[in-house]
Image (cartoon, helix red, strand yellow):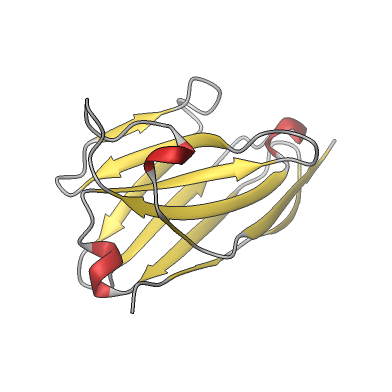
Length: 125
């Protein structure tokens, strides 16, 4: 069964930190690409970071230098360390898995076919 389960969301003040974790089934973890996406109310789902099986990452400009993604092969998890959080980071965060696109792991939601149920992150000013 292909499965992704997110955890670690919550509420934090601006400048604070949160760590999200995505537990994957083996088939999901072995996908070419995994990633974190987020969706705020009334907005489209946007890519936060993608990571391939070698650990190569692609970050959205809005989170570069603040967020760090990492894979734990023993636990089959994809983690997202979020530091210096801003109110505009408030969103539902989703873990995803999928195949390579034409140019690697792109920050495009339509490139990913497996999704978790999401975890809410709320940052207050």
